Length: 348
Image (cartoon, rainbow, N blue to C red):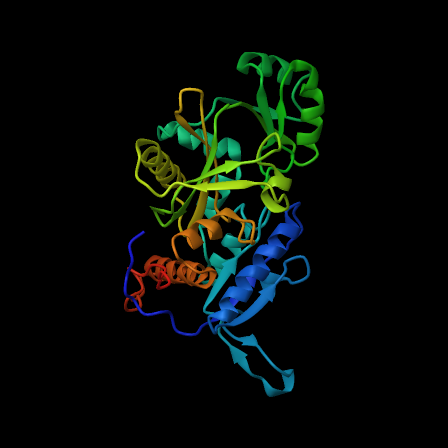
């Protein structure tokens, strides 16, 4: 990532959205708390919202009341940082709401968010755009008896069963044989009525953080578990992260594939692309996360830290990106220095 000498952003009034009612609520709360702490460390005023308790549709972001009601004091929320994982946060719903309210927000817009959140629709877009992704079949809880078994036989074992619209590897099962398929389908359909049977890719798992088209160093993930599941992501102490900062044919192909996946979906702001290598070492995109985790176990902050970018600098960059996109979308004057702004590396 290029290092720019743009000044740090002015002190802003920001909102952080976290929590919600999805299966990823607890992770979202941890992400939101980390983001809010980073902003406060940067001297910004922060208000935290949880859609599980706060009705965002009635919030006046332009004249938000603060202090005692009798004083009538209000502030303008400069930008909303979305740390909502799962439904309502990553599926385009909250983005649509904020767009209708004319409020800048971080991350991809409503269309790209909805597209990326559906693993099936994202995979279709990847195929249309020539982005390598594992073969898969869409399944539904309403399919005729035997359809999933026939589809699985056509893909071959081992394979992966995953809910279509779910994150953090929730509901995902690696199925070694036909005898284990029904149990995996039952797990999948607990979280979504639609799922995917996907060809298992046997090689190393990698992830690449992409910030408005610029990639951070790829990370190879190692875990003692069957795959990089919820436990490995958020609580296991033996999960290993290997950073690849040197330019090799592999890292170049990982970076280009990650960027191509984000372009295919129209992503903006911070995204994380999950990739696996096949037996020949060729990379395949598994999915794109438009609101990746921001906890102390999360991969995007780890990659940024490796580049010398503090959590505060990373979060401030996301705000600057959001403001630039908002002003551009609304044909307004771009704030001086905003268009080219990138997170500033720490000295030393």
